[in-house]
Length: 305
Ligand SMILES: Cc1cc2nc3c(=O)[nH]c(=O)nc-3n(C[C@H](O)[C@H](O)[C@H](O)COP(=O)(O)O)c2cc1C
Image 1 (cartoon, rainbow, N blue to C red):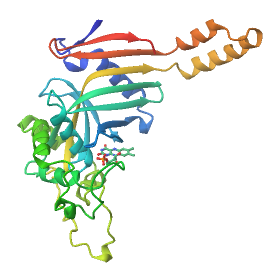
Image 2 (image 1 turned 45 degrees about the horizontal axis):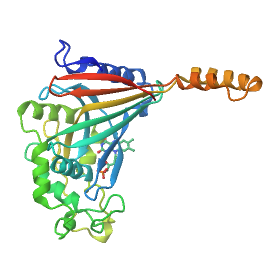
Image 3 (image 1 turned 60 degrees about the horizontal axis):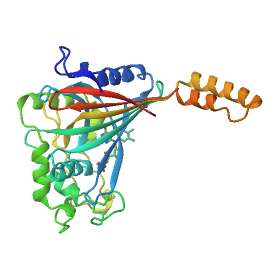
Image 4 (image 1 turned 60 degrees about the vertical axis):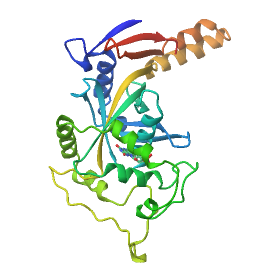
């Protein structure tokens, strides 16, 4: 297994080959707006998979852990926040584990990144309470759970035992950062969101049943006044810290087109030509990068695709 650098190198966490590769892919695909969206996979309280798209807003070195980090923002009241917390409580290493699957269309690369998670909430936000409410909001994927409720506050008083709050509080306390450096990053991250993006955090709790205003919604959410320096209490910075990466590169369009043309020409003369098949397969490459926490370095091996 070859070492591909890490924090021990002078260049810091992002000098590892996997982050250099990721950074190149991001640059090379910039022209495609949707290339910044990736799928984020978690496991729900009943063990069901849960996948959603998220916008990866930054790749940077996390000054606290000194590891490479992908930054996303989310609503602290969302179900995924609960799933991060539950993962930390249930995992033997007391860390949350998620998987990000990210496809870059122009370079035809797929990254499957296993990541640890760190969260930064706004000062004064009651993140534990808001996430508790999310955990008893509607079942996201038709598994077990309480009936959808309006607004979310009604759900908070439900007696659902889907995710007992001590577990949730413990999980969140394992993930939440309280240091000033992280807090400063949180405020800067908030500022990088435009007005429309910020306004989403002051809407009703995500995933609850929408009640028409004219029906009278006693539990209507009271939006918090926002400013550049005061992120919404519902705004959560999520750091995804990769610890393994499976990178699959598909052959470029031109290559596969050329191969296809060659293949049909060959098939004309000679059916089932093994060499032609082999050459086609060799167009793909697959690499596995694994972070060695003890040595603080990344190792890489090439896999059969
Ligand atoms: C293209 C796209 C980008 C999205 N980006 C984000 C994001 O950055 N953060 C986020 O919380 N939700 C994002 N969403 C919404 C999520 O996919 C999801 O619907 C929402 O976060 C609720 O998920 P949850 O109930 O599993 O927590 C995005 C959706 C789409 C279609």
